[in-house]
Length: 179
Picture 1 (cartoon, rainbow, N blue to C red):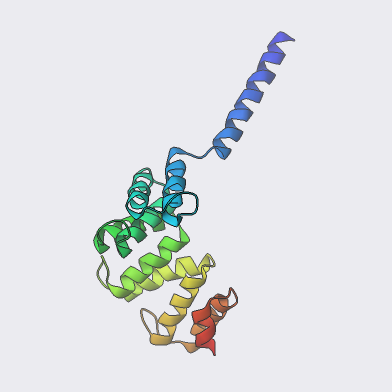
Picture 2 (picture 1 turned 90 degrees about the horizontal axis):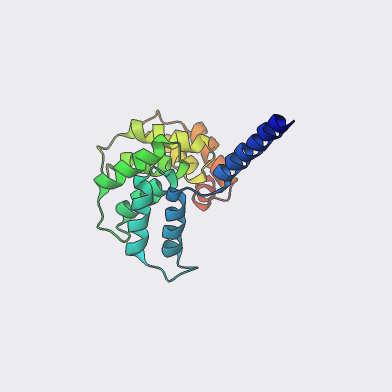
């Protein structure tokens, strides 16, 4: 009986640890949440430099949302010197983890040649991955590529399809383009 209770107790401890591992934020997530607090300035006074630095620390730990935000900071020069090449590096890391906003922003980098060689085919590839995840901005960007024949054959029907998906989510630019 004692052996049985020991096994049950061990199982309960293991289950508790598994649950806690799923609910407790990792170090990278904790740093990210602190960075976001400085970014949005709602809980603490906004501090762009501190936000960017903390996003970078979290990004180094492999947290995709932080990699995206750090890449965005570098792309926009938010709290750090603008550096398109470093931005593309961090956006790629987040995109490789499937993070939708990074997929879209990396597509934009390829479309405009910011930090990477301009390549419409790669822009469409990244936009498509984000659009298929339902990101309205990427759906709009993909529609734009179809309207203009950037990286894909010009196809107004596909453009309307993607604009419609974005417009149905309230994306104003897509609504405007649909008339």
